[in-house]
Length: 150
Image (cartoon, rainbow, N blue to C red):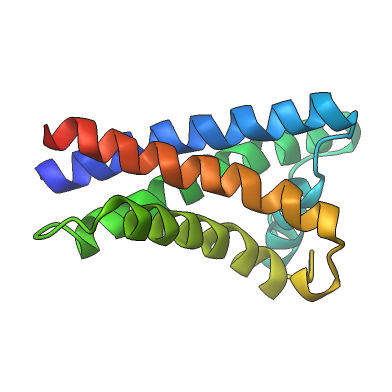
């Protein structure tokens, strides 16, 4: 149970860092928020035949559910890492890379499978906008584990 709790706490810390890094990128470059989470929710809702409402109500639900999917991805990546490394935590470079990769796969894998995005077609700035926040996630989640492990 302790491993699960530590994983969820590390995931929450990492997700907060990812969000901060993303918002800072938006401020620095003056770019809009990504619409991919909302597009994923829309496609999932259509596939599951779930009515999200009409007009602004539906758009608000997509935005909220998209954000919640992000929190779930962050929690799931760190929880998976915690379960895989419960007996022996890897050194920080390996742990940070593993957490970063799990978060990127957890977010981009489903988006790619749903046809919302295709990383093979991303520009260099799109890669930077994706890698840097996920690296912030990996560093922060790993640091959270380190603090909890004493």
